[in-house]
Length: 134
Image 1 (cartoon, rainbow, N blue to C red):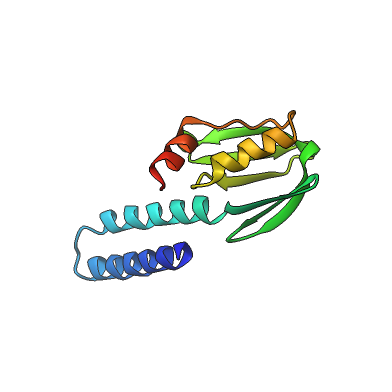
Image 2 (cartoon, rainbow, N blue to C red):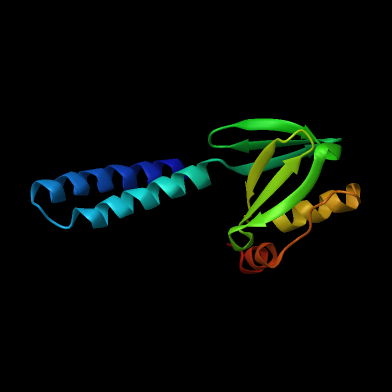
């Protein structure tokens, strides 16, 4: 649904921008709206919505890509946007982003039990999402 929603906002913003330019209206407002939609699309479509651990590998999938990394290759997990996105950084420089959704906290806790040296921890945002069932 998310790519579809972004496409609708993008089309609506473009149509409004063209209409305002033709009518000599406040077109900068719609230009800023389109910049906001572009920023949301760039950041959210590349965030992974699925993580699977099988043995020593993490498989991730986003709207625009997918990949696999070894657990031992993950050197850090950093929090972005008040904890709503986690950035996994690997030894070879590979990075992938993970959206913190319901189920992220139990996933990370299970990974930490199975792999005690894994560099991720559960943040306040992940606890809030699971507690409120967002």
